[in-house]
Length: 186
Image (tube, rainbow, N blue to C red; front, side, top):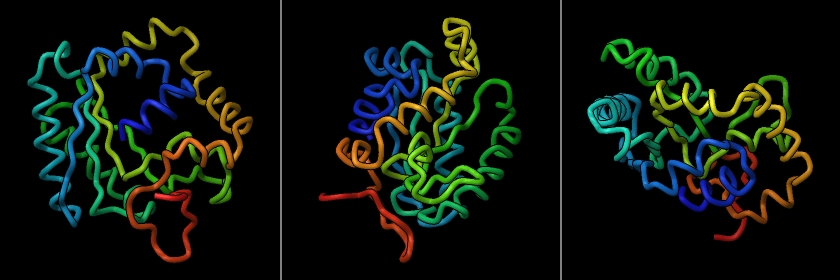
């Protein structure tokens, strides 16, 4: 995940806000060993509560990786509704939010192998827990934040599938039969 963060997210500047928290050591990496949604929800609750209680100077954001669960993107995508409900149950809506990354991420209306899907692909299914306050501050510092999405797609188009593969940041979890994998050599 650190390789993905450094080479893709920061290296390609897909998220202009990531470098600062990375350099300051404010990213918490957590691995869920859950094998089903119920277990992931328990781990998610623990990580949401820990992030909410932690000082932003020590822990500004959390990446919760799911290497043993949610290999199928559609299952993962359906699970996101439960993850958002967890925010409400914990009364953390408006304080924290959850973004998502998945090795098989696919934008609606794109082909599986469309390189622009890589903007939201990570080595493992991942829930990114973000402080709303930090996000607001970052957007304020980057006035054209709404342009990031379009810029990222253009960066990936210019990089192309071979360039993405050369970064060696592809899927590190099992990919169901019949699905493309950009894993490359291990």
